[in-house]
Length: 295
Image 1 (cartoon, rainbow, N blue to C red):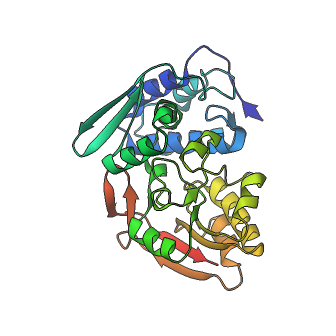
Image 2 (cartoon, helix red, strand yellow):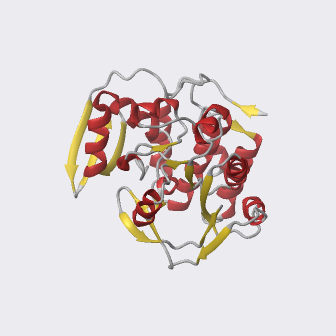
């Protein structure tokens, strides 16, 4: 079942209300971000939930008893967005404003804004300055946070030197291969203006990836990790080389599936033993365990 409730609230306005409620709660913001990303992959609309995504967010909200927000309060806001599948693809009429400060750039379009590094801003501007307003709006409604973290750029540099030129899960704001002349898969088809090649789960995109060397670093949700493992294994059977990076969840479906791949090279890193990259914070030590399957 897919839930979409009709109302007059604009997507950006809905996310601003969510920010006002949960901005100081890091874990809850991450939960909502994962929910929006999962919806977008499942229904092509971040605000159109499924039974599974809805149940997962409810579970995560209820897991921490110190939270005063009920799932109903969150869903009342998220469900208030218009029914249209193109809710986040509306024409942009507001001017783009750019502000520099603290070594970062804040790109604003109307009520939507996103921070990024100066280097990333210059890259986006060079590739497609006219599309910046629509780009900011698209990603603002996904509440970008930890899902936008990527593997240490030093590892990406080594992988790129070894011929890995595609990322299975990235965005114009966090793709590490984009700046090296590579390509990436993302949740929005409009990202083709910034070297995106489509959604990793789309059959048309998978055809483009046959025989390629691919870095697969899915959002850390069990559903997406499991689906990504299925696609990665299938692509490997069609000649693709896979570098799959995920959380150290030994009891998860994706871990079981990848462990059964013949000849897969495995490595794991415990909390504090590896580094990740955020386009705002830079490179920092990860507090979570991770694993890599290369096949």
